[in-house]
Image 1 (cartoon, rainbow, N blue to C red):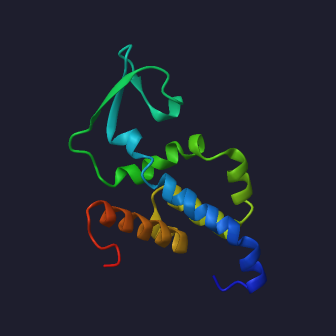
Image 2: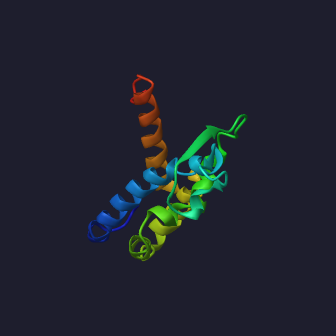
Length: 135
């Protein structure tokens, strides 16, 4: 924001990737806090354990805190986004700070990236509910 055009052009791919990763990770925390996953052997699975390796069943947590999943995304984003991508994005300090805030669900501190992710989420929810995302 406010950067010279040359700098903006050099960072455009990184900002596009960060926007996509921010949107991808936005609801990722739901599998950590909004559902209980029980494996066939009776043990509880958590997303930081890695991929599911046996049959499972799940149930939604009653009385869940709707806001918690945003913060919980920070527990598992590194399991989904390749380390090389994170290394690359960390080379853009302004973008990186915003992305880290977005990964933690702190969109109010994530500046323009937080705005992009929030608007994308609102549009997705509106579309799913049959509403107008432009409202």
